[in-house]
Length: 279
Image (tube, rainbow, N blue to C red; front, side):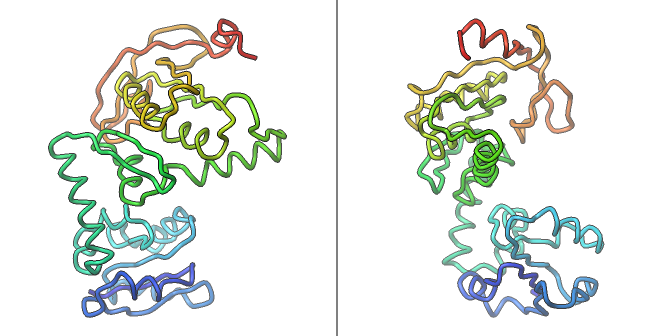
């Protein structure tokens, strides 16, 4: 299998030594920030573009789109979820030590989905979650990568609140408004700011059940207030549309991915604060 390497991390050679079956791959070239990008245009000379990047995936996907490289030929080497979307390349290129472990996890996840099981996931930070196996956007990458969803964004959010608002996280509430299954609020108040209490709102009944389960799994029920409401400018009941394959995408606007409807309660946050005497 012919592969073009795009290395913006400087560690592609070491990674390839560890994970790739050498006899199954021919590297036609390596692109770095200092080299010519002409090889990208020579699409007939390689089958897959293997990208090593540092959290700037959107840029490389835009570059591939500009070069008319289809997403089916682009793999982000350090993202197991990207390999999961390319099973042929995964089984051909990855060795049993690295790739074999990944293949096992992918097969386990697919089996769970086939039988509509819930899938537990333990992150690198020792947090535990249970979620529907149909979720492509939160639990699948967490399960494959062993990293908490939105970890980078939460660390950045914490830094920005300190710089611009002087909030040090020593006391108060972390508001998770649209908590889904709790991966954001639990991570933030368990790992980043353990002195904060968690106030989580989640309107979808199915997500709310999983949120409560995950709070218990992570010993967070005593420091959390979880409310089964959505938030709006007036108290109301509204139709919420459920995205089966991305429960975090549920909302009051219809979508194209496995739509199911549910009536949910909406309350104003200001009114909630007043009734609960929260400053």
